[in-house]
Image (cartoon, rainbow, N blue to C red; front, side, top):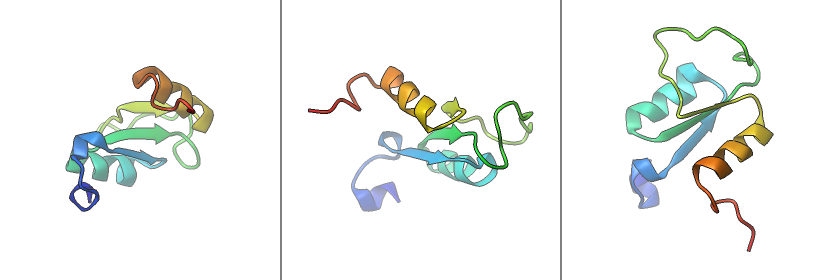
Length: 79
């Protein structure tokens, strides 16, 4: 998929709410991952040992925006 976008996998970010599919699949491709804990994988739920850990793990979309701004200063700046 990153090749179709003409960028490196390491320059992409997969945002998902399922570690077993969204995060695991992106990790296999070398894509950065962000888990938003909604739905079945809510905040506070125990982590399953066989699942990969995301690069960013947050409770909701507002927290994701804060985490992205902290990790990549200026990325979300509005001109």
